[in-house]
Length: 633
Image 1: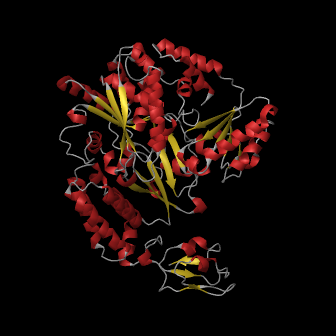
Image 2: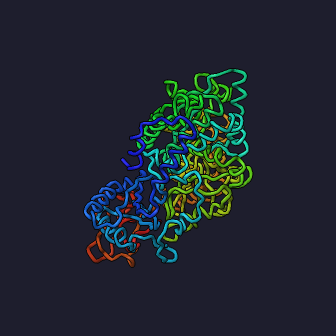
Image 3: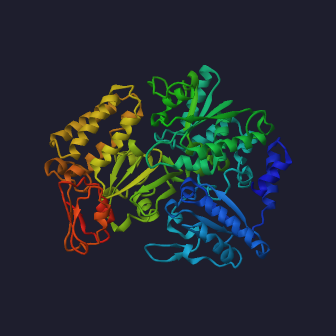
C-alpha cells in the first residue's frame, strides 16, 4: 500500500465538510518532497500483458538491493495506461521526466544503478524518433504526446488509481465540494449546458439538454430519478472507457455524484463489461474509499445530500451498449432493446426518469464544474466542444490511446501523432465509430474530427475507435468483418437485423468469391437503406454504415471483385494466388518448413515453387519470407 494511503487510513476520519477535504489535500501536498525520485510504471492492461508487473517486482528488488547506497530512496508508483501502448511496458522517472520504453525486468538493476543512483539516463531505453532518428528523453517531447491535449486523461499515468490520496492531492473531489457548498443543482446543470459537452458514447447528444429534459420529466412525474454510467464498451479496437475506469476511477465516480446532485438522484449504477476485470476492481476500490471518507453515501461532506451507487456487470452482449437493452439488463431481464416510444430521460430504469451517459462523458463533469462551462466551451470547435479520447489502432506505427481537441484534422492524428503507416505503405482509409461507423478515405484525410464533419463524411464519432488501414486491407473484407460481428451480436428481436444483416453479409461473401454482378451493388444499397429505416435500435440502423461508405468511396474495388475476379488488396482467398519469384528466392526453405499443407517444393539453395492446387492461401509463406520472394497475384 502506498505511503500516503497508509497515512489516510490511520486517521480513521470521515470528512465532514469541504473544509476537511481541503485540509486533507493540503496535508497530502505538504508531505510530497518534489526532489524525491519516483519511478512511475504503467500498469494499464496493455503494459501488464507485456510484463509490467514483473518489471515493477524487479525494480523493487533492485532498490532493496541498492539499500543504503541510494542517497534518496525512490518510490514506485503504478498507474493506469500511459497511452503509448505499442511501446510498453513504459516507465517515467520523476522529477527528471525521463521516458523509458519497452522495459524488461532485466533492465531494472541498470535503471536503479545508472539513473536513480547516478542521475544518468539509460540511452538504449529512451525513445528514438523513427523519422528523424533523434533520441528523445522526456514524455512531453515525443511527437505522440506533444500533439495531444490531455484533459480527461490528465490524471492517468500520474496517479495510482487504487489510492484515493493521489486523486485528492491532484485536486480530486474539489468539484464536488464546490458544487455542494457554493452551487445549486440548477447551477450545475447550467454549467454543463454552457460547456456544450456532447455525449461521448456515440450519438453526440448535448449532455446539458439531456439533463434539462430529465428535470422537466421529474417535474411531471416526480422522483425517484436514476443516473447511470454506460461502461459497456464493445466496439472492436475500442479501449477508451476501459482505460479511464482503470486509470482514473474516482473521476468517473465524482462525475456521477455531481450528476446525481444536479438531478436529485439518490441511486446510481455503473454498468461495466465483465470482460473488464481491472476496471471493475478499481471502481470497487474507489467506491469503498469514497464511502469511507464521506464522499459517497449518506450526508456527503456534511451537506445533507445522500447518494450511493452500485456496479452491474454486463455479460458481454454488444447490444447492451444500447440504452434500453442496458436498462433491461440492470433490471435483471435479458438485455434486449425495446422500442423508444418515450425517451429514457422520461422512462428509463423501472419506468422512471433516467440519465445515461458513457464513461468519458461523466469524467468530463468534474472538470466543467471546477473550471466552468465557458472554459470547456473554448476547447475544440463550436458545436463540438472539448476534447475526445480515441484508441488509435490498426496499420499505424504508434498504436495507443490519444486525446485531442475536437476539430483536429484526421491526418494529424494518423500521420503526426500516430507516426503514419508502417513500412511506408500507402494510407488507405480510417474506420471511425467502430462497426457502426464508416470508412473515410485518404482523399478526405484533412477532414476535421468533430461530430458534424464525420457525419457529413458518412461516418460518425462513435465511442472513439479509430482503425487505420493501408493498401493491404480490402474494403469488401472490412465490411464482411463488421457485419459478421454485428450479426453475432444482434439480439435478433427485429426482422431487419435478424434477416437483413445475414443477407447483407451473404451478398458481401459473394463479392469476396468473385460471384455476382455489378447489379448486386444496387441490392447492397437498397437492403442497407431498408435496414437503416426498419431496425428497432441503433445497432441495426447503423450496421450498414461500413458497407455504404466503402461503396461510396471504393466502388471500383467492389467492381473489381465481380467483374475482373480480382481482389486489389490481395486479401479475398478465392480471388488470389500465391507464387514464388524465382529470381528473388534464395532457397532458404523457411516457407516450406512452415507451410501447413506441405505444398511448397524445392531443394535447399534453389528456387522453390508453390503447388497452387494444394495451397489454402493462408499467407504463412508471405509472412515467413524475408526476401519478398512470395508474391500475391
